[in-house]
Image (cartoon, rainbow over all chains, first blue to last red):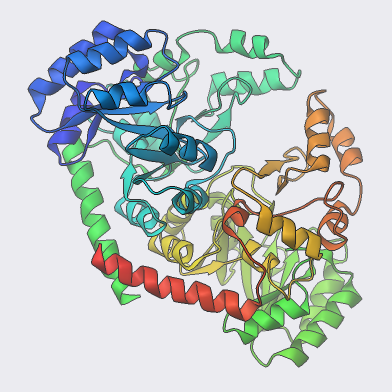
Length: 294
Length: 294
């Protein structure tokens, strides 16, 4: 959710009765501080910050989170042992994002309060095992005894209920909120998400860090390069810098990295967060009633 | 389900109250006839035959199906227009297996009675779009108005209920029945399925026909070859002939092709088909009751 989840999206989410998250992944430390401060002004409800731990200024980021009194941190892309104890000592609830059973067990061992298990269909950066949400959730559930949050492929109340049937205690939703009015993404990217169909995304750049994105000109260039059995360095050179910003924030649909989940194929409109949440919860309740009649 | 689904598995399935299928993919025409005849003797319930339409002796196969009075055919791997009308004129119910919305629409247009929509997590041959069951089912459901059967990642009553929440009218289950007493697979392969963990399978050989298999010595050889940017011909040469038979039927775990779904990670025992069906249905009913309490 880099370049999508600033204070507007996080506060609107928390104000709608769910837990909003600010995505620190695309922010300089002082930008994050500004977003946290604005979020606190915009909502009295709890919200959290998602921190990819590979971030270069990680200590600075964590210090800001503590200084600003954020009570919930979602960590990803790194070893959960590194920060969990430090954060928990400061009274912060820690949730770690994983893509496999092995990493879920490591996170539990590191003492996190809950794990997000994210399947292959999810947008953006993703695991190497390519395990889908439908199979990952029951396999993780079988092995851990802390709360389990399902992610990847969930944009509707029905999918929320389906993953809870599989054993999830809660869900994390990304792509659906990209196409919200409050997402900080460029309108051209939001529109592309709404127009996406089944089959329009692909997981690629697995040798660097696997990422699911929309198949655009940039993706085709990657595919051309793959035909030459490229080295990691050649792939890195093609990727270059700031591709995600270019695509999602600046709206360069051809040369930018357009990270979105497979579920984009059933996202058909850009709406305010409050309406999205309302629709998901109404569909969730309706789906429960339909099951009773099954 | 090639090399797994002969008359024993199909008749045991039909006798357990579900629809058993004989997989024609691994059979010579006269072998198929023998399996159909044995299946008719072993059950009075309806059963079907799954026919990959790329089969070289396809006319002969279809003639045998008609001659033997089989009333249900599942077609896959080919254009649904080719055989649907011909089969339906003979009073046969036709179900076509698809991996994308586009192919589901083509199947509906061809006049099939139902479609199986199979996700990326499924074992064996698979689609190019890599769409997972969790996202494929709602997207297909949105576009078609004929019955929809979910497949890929389903081995339990909970997964069955989850996919029905997403919009499926029924489910097709493969991998779970590989690890049944009645499957014709080699015991060494069944045991490997039971021992498989999350992350042990991978979709590969995408340039030929994408196939999900267990990562064994043969898979590692494919990966080594990929590093050299191989041509299709080089991949075909490595694949050679009868790899699937070697792995699944003859039990060569190192050099054979071991086709199974990601869901193998939660399959922990080899049981009679009747017990598998009983367990799935009991879990399905329990899961419904749990939802009511949610």
